[in-house]
Image 1 (cartoon, rainbow, N blue to C red):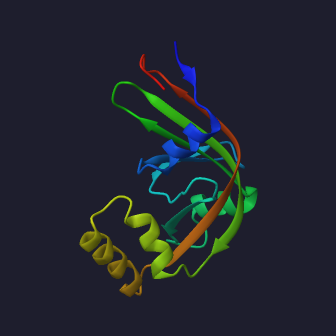
Image 2 (tube, helix red, strand yellow):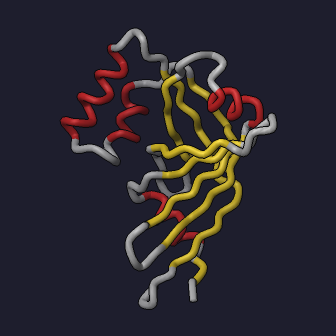
Length: 150
């Protein structure tokens, strides 16, 4: 039987470098948009993620700006299964994220040298326009499916 995670456990799990599935509401006949993202998070703080702004009419950017809310699902796919979902409000949109903001996210997923090279490639490429979103967690839910959970 899955055990609900405490608030502290949910925040600690979210602070680990998992891939999140970001879900955005839809404003047309299509279902909500869901996509995998790298994200930044430290317990007690907001969630950040950045993306390429491929065009002003990008569905992803349009939905997050139109609605100002997002959900994230972060999971451990290996046994014992564990997951955290977060519903949140977009509290900031930065059309010129700094290298430090981008590295704070990228370093969670790549070794230092690779993270620096990855971010440098994005910053130096004139064809890539980036945007950083900050999401305030409003509601949490999480479960641990392990038999030996703390």
